[in-house]
Image 1 (tube, rainbow over the protein chains, first blue to last red):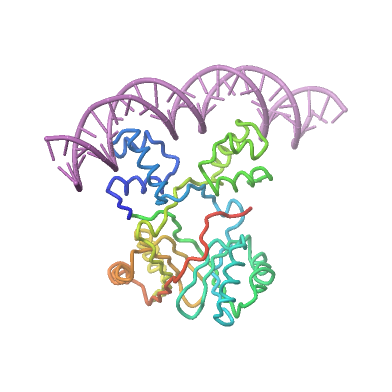
Image 2 (cartoon, rainbow over the protein chains, first blue to last red; image 1 turned 120 degrees about the vertical axis):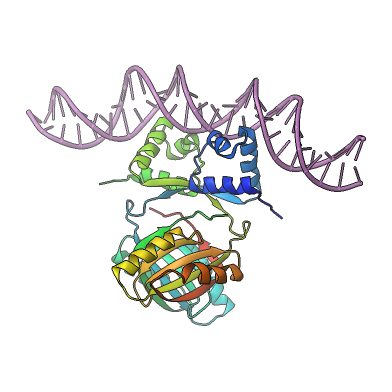
Length: 153
Length: 153
DNA sequence: TAAGATAACCGAATTTTATTCAGATGATAA
DNA sequence: TTATCATCTGAATAAAATTCGGTTATCTTA
């Protein structure tokens, strides 16, 4: 069982906001020595509380800012269909997220492409060719109001 | 206008996977010198193609792995309501993402909390108290099949 | 095409940061 | 009480980022 004290939570908060913060800066913010901070970070990494460090990019600048939330229903809920769908989804680079959900649809996937034309292509050439897919319904994102990876502890 | 060559795209790919890669490693992977890689990274940061670097954490390990996609409909589409809703949503730490969308609902928000009870509390105490909200519909996530921040260029 | 400007590159030097080390402190349990 | 363990500290070392001087490639335009 992993227990995190107040300092750990603060530390995780800082690193979720800016992974490039140096141990020196962090030690100042947390009122600890360099080494103490260093060892806390290493422990969090060892425990896999911190899983990885990534660079985030501006989707507009790289022309991948056409976002669609696509609701997917499977034909039948056969184990075979489920496994096949989940396996294929993992391969599709346009799909950043995929959730198995309750409700009218089985899955919700988050898709990033360049524009509507690229989405149409994605839909007909990549998504709907997966066997077992019954129907899809696309919800287009008009505006991204908020998007953060920061989980407050 | 920002143009990215093949090397930039590869570099961005690597940094999206692991922001802790050293320039030395990257220079080996890209077949360039230390300095060349360094300057490319700095340029991408200056251009705000790379916006920031963050640590990602395991939501299970910190007990924030109860995820809900909540569809929100506003009472009336008054500018006042829209601005008020968007302003309030930004303040809610449980809401990691919020999208203004086409279709039957106005917004889809992605919420992370500890469990169903925390979600109920969030709903009654934080979300539905925002003025202008008409109705909400919660879709519970049974399983996270895929979740990546890596956009392939 | 040739000159000039600019961008991208290189290797070496320097500065800063991460990491290791030896030992001190404090909490916990037998 | 004493042994054990986790956490801490400051200093030393190793490794990384950053700067520097100068070269090469690319592009513009006279």
